[in-house]
Image 1 (cartoon, rainbow, N blue to C red):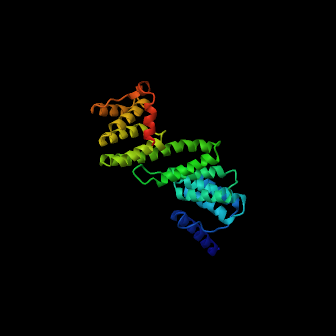
Image 2 (cartoon, rainbow, N blue to C red):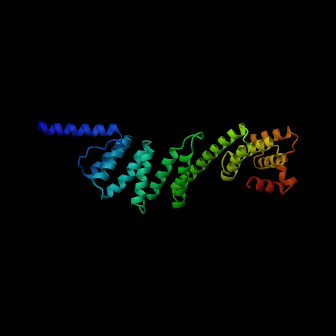
Image 3 (cartoon, helix red, strand yellow):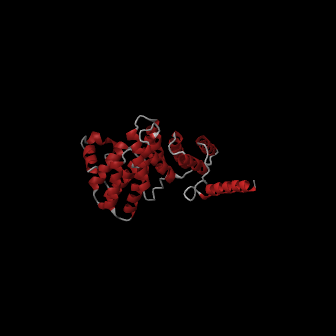
Length: 277
């Protein structure tokens, strides 16, 4: 009796240490239990927002009962628990393993979505390397391509727009640095990238204005005038157009503004063709 009590205490202690040590360091001590009990234990932890413990119990379902239907369900539940616990690397790994093993499952769309939003949650600020942002973009686009009519695709499209805005913000940040330091051609390339590749983002009006600044700095007045015309036609009430207008008029350069099509119907098209190369 004394030996049995001691064994129970050791098992409980091992489980507690495993939970405290983190999923990547140790696992729950192996104590064979019915599959429903393990799954319900994981779900109970999930409801209490104890996400690490939940993921461990869901992993334990797969470890002890690998060929059961519960194992497939638990694999995705572990991914979800890790996502909720901000353990995005593990969430991505679990969800990727799920789609590799069960590509035809009715839960595959959610698995792809979970991969995408886990990448999305790892996006850093625009001053950092944007490789994570591009991974998020690729994963979100994959959801839209594979499952276009699902709610997952609908949400992914919204996140794609925000991710594009983030990438455009990075290009603008670099372009501004080039402009401040006199690297005007490099700055022009960055601002043109925003206009060409991220046309629906909030950064386009500023990118056009920065192009005007860059061309003026190079003394290329006609190009500056044409870009300002595009800016005035598409964003006539923006502060960026006002800044471009003031900059050019202060140098004696006429700006057609939002009347560009009335003055010369072909000027807007020629200007856009010049910008987009």
